[in-house]
Length: 583
Picture 1: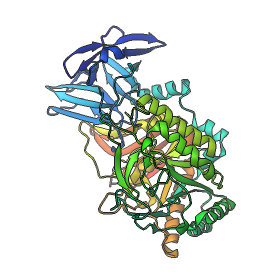
Picture 2: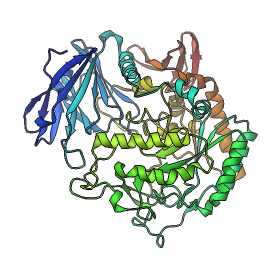
Picture 3: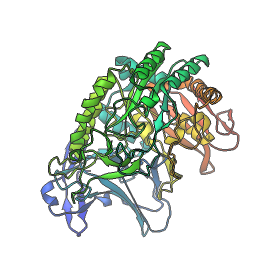
Picture 4: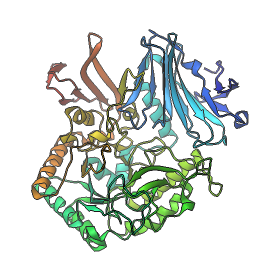
């Protein structure tokens, strides 16, 4: 592959050539920053991916957080089309065709999008990097790695190459090793997460710029005393273990006054009840943890300072979203570690012993900050994010967050969902011949995760979501009051919910948790294995609805995603059912 010329193309039509070097079978391509002076956008070597309609082979591209899975592209006949998407959760893509088969790894020191094109019967795929504005200025070389893949090995070889390389470089750790070293991870592998949203104000808030005087009233859904009732009911119904994670326990409830946490909201019972509840939950053999947030900041917080907030290239503060606390401003990651270090030791002293959860930080690209007082660009922002995650893991003994961006995987023990999937409605993705669990093929056996936001509370979700949870190797994740958005805004974990407003609803909710735990019990040990391949069984050239996850111990999980009874190797599967075939 070294005999090729690898080029980048600017918007102005200028052609830039990468410098290439090979070491231990990996080709490193470098585009020096000096060549990028005055450039606003570059498109990276589309010609290496060139394929004709009807050719054998495929592309594999990473999902972003809005997609149901990773994008598998066959070179099918289609009209001329261009499709672009940004914020991929993994910094790589794969090209598999007769004359070129390689995993392409992009260093995430710039923000970029993928551009897929079919024009006059020719397919291409290319990363596109933009500079300036909310993106990074030119500050570093562009670096890409190419790893040759055997053409006949298929998708599995791409996943194996990425996992192996990251393990060899010490960027990620086997889950089996984490479980040996830290009891909280081993416990989490076996038992579910149960998140309990305790209090929140209207979201989005009618008051965008909140003060203590104009702050809307908080709705109290679950006090600390009621958390003890939940724990009692879990015990009564025979749920062996769980991590009860308190959300919205802090002043102002969920997303109420971040980065301010304290005092613990008295409407929920205050600090004395928090401590009592933590000790009681642990006395029953369960674990307890909390939810914090070090990305969003609200003006009402007594710790809020404009000096912390990111600025764009025009000097405007970075305001993204409006939630219970009003307008949410993103904090510059260079400033954010101090917020964590100011509040988290006090929180850790209150007795939690589960996988601590810090929201958002692993499900967004790290922000670029153009503030002249604390400029931070993507590569440095990633290091700050990793520092926050590492600090909290050391403080609490474990770390979890909302998403699974690959820059965070080395720090994560658990991700609440790999992507939102259909949480905001089923999204058409042009060029996707099908969605595949490529992320899961790389990272199962490295971290615990829940596949998509709709697979939270999987026993009460659609049959497809329930089976997706099983087939993608998820850890059971439950949520009391997952539904909280107001004003017609989508609840990305669905509108079917667990609640505890009455004793009857509490018993019913725990019944579903017990049902999910029972279904998962035989699968918990598979968290220590890799999904080495994933098969879509075809009949007469079309998907049959049967999917097969192949595990590294030789076992298989077979699922029937059709609404008809199916037979696989002599085993009859009812619609949306699954079975395990041992080696």
